[in-house]
Image 1 (cartoon, rainbow, N blue to C red):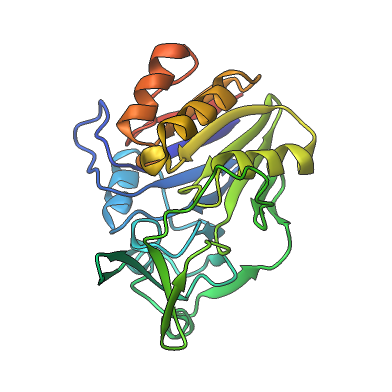
Image 2: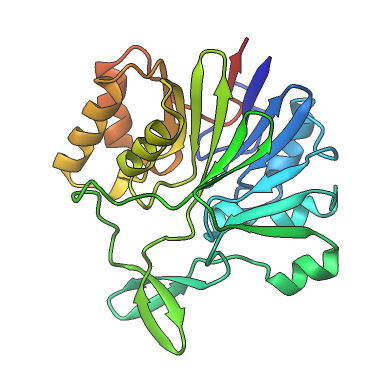
Length: 275
């Protein structure tokens, strides 16, 4: 059995004892082993895991999709539970990330550095290849070809590099893929490189049908045409389950909910089980 639990997300679920926040975190349990994908913006996901009877002290890998606070912010709190995991990120994860608004800049990056990892005794590896198998059937993927020209990154996202602000192209973004008996389950953090670009890479590398897509698609900032193209991409395919949320945006989720019975709002406490 493979179980993927949304430990935290923007929206509350039916379990009202769980905390919710802008961010996302998934616990993947496969064949008696665990991988954590993203950590939300705080330690609230840890309390939620306790409410859901999911132990985190035996996690083997923590994969963080990209260096934004709402995906990496809970790692500091996790070190109070365990430091025995290996952290996996994309190259460039520790660059200083900002958002620009009319000449003002706001820091959006991580609340820890490489020095913190070293001081905490946490093993760390960058994903420098297109994919890496972490535990049997569970893969980290990166290096996504940008083939859909309309999947544009908002120019407000910036990197502070060598004393200058430059466009953040999110080359550090990675995702998690679980190969299940029913097909591929794709976990997305924010999909800054483009949801269709990322899922096309999954299809090309695994050559298997996608059973489910969960996580953030960043359609919240897409144009109306971009939202429609992405909704058509999801609903017009053989994907069995669509559980996108977080940065997907209410407009896109409304369209998916109206057009597809296979869509559900993946929220805090939601669980996908593949038998």
